[in-house]
View 1 (cartoon, rainbow, N blue to C red):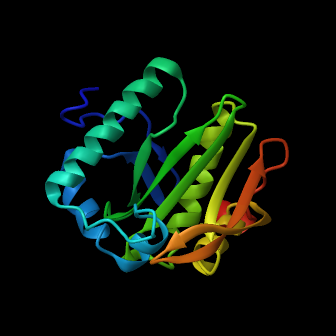
View 2: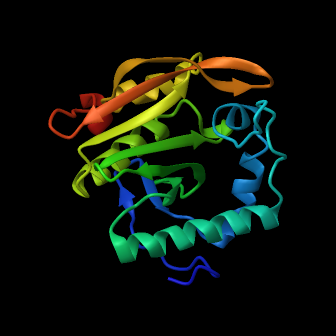
View 3: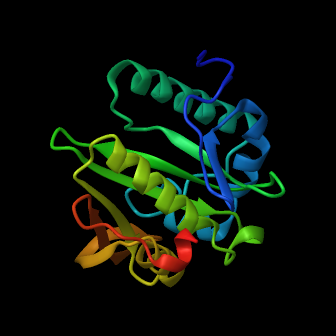
Length: 204
């Protein structure tokens, strides 16, 4: 896989509703448009030490981000450690791009963290829960003992996704995050390989 052309998915995950595949350079416009969405900037986008969000991506910025993802896929291919790999989420029926999910970290103790976002037109249709289940199953298959998510308190939609995907709310880290100069609490949701069971309606 060439990090400079974003060609060829290494891993594709799918059910009858969503397809997860690595990002391609052709997806840059979708990424750039999503980066300007207020909800994505609030809960997923990069920000400075005072919680001020980074500017929305240009197409060139998005291409560079996709190239970084490609390099992370190369690293995964070489090491078996998926830290930094990211999938675009597509609707299985239409092929329309709807969001993103990716592995933020994989520790030496085989604990994985991931995150996700869904573009505004596709929210509320179950794509995020399906993607979270597929990604969690894949991470456990790679040997993760624990998979966890951090979700800003008040992001009720994302918390509902985590619960539908079989994650337990383990607690809240007080004043752990910051947004526009205001400290905010961050919730921790986790699933363990030995007990994980997504809600039945999400697997049918």
